[in-house]
Image 1 (cartoon, helix red, strand yellow):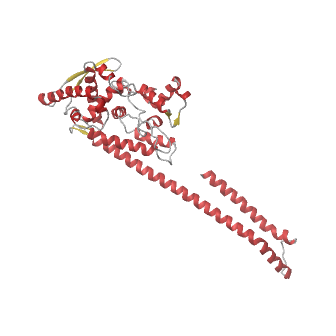
Image 2: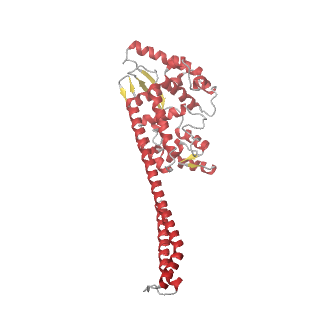
Image 3: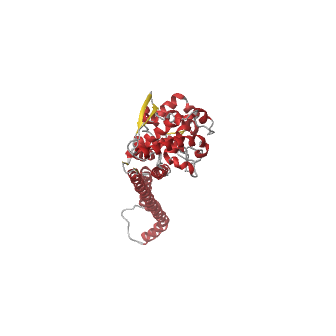
Length: 375
């Protein structure tokens, strides 16, 4: 904008200077007499009338040109002020939304014992235990393979079931479910809910601080862990997480669809948001994204409703700091999961990918940008 204004002003100055020189030379050219000195006589009066008649249109054109130039300068100044106002309004709303997100996280509470980010640690531990219980169900492989959920691998199906019960709680099975997973996974869900209800009864019967359940999970080997909840377990966290992720999603969409920003500016703003997410928050968010994954034209993976198609996760690396030491304990491998999504949507770092960009070696480099822990 500054370069364009400089060019316009420079060109206008040259034109003005040219007109000024012409005006000074016109008397001599049109009267064939010296400009200095002029004698006062009838001839000079006629000369003045002649010059006035000749120069009038040129002076009028010059005045019109200067008026137009002043209008253009004012118009550009107004445009600049308008853009600054839009950007200031965007920043005010962004930081207000960021403050609300922080307040939402800090307001999360589990049994008045675990607040804020610490609550996500307990949610993850509960989810990991539910996942391990799911693996203990007899003939789980056959039951999972029988589920018709197109494009979902076994680990994705398992984490969807586990997250569903952590999110809604076991009592939610008796209520209407607006998530299609509730119907597709009904047979396994009933078995899992029955097991978890037994643990709820033990918690109430043995005392609120005496339930101790050993379970196994795998992460670079076999690990034995003890689940010792000091709160009523498997009761659901929908009231805590639903509005949190709705607000987070709309905040990311707000930045991604800001037309006055280029890709780098959008990335920098979302980087500030990403910096507010703890390791366990990002892990829970990753499982939430798998759970609600669908083919809608507007979701975490692809947004086709904006001015241009983009992916919040692939274009802006929202989960760049995803902790693999947590996610590798349950659910699908994030690298494999994101690779499949990249091949499907062909998006990365604000660009539309070609088929040649999806070769294994090139994909490896792209995954290094998407995940900090992958370097």
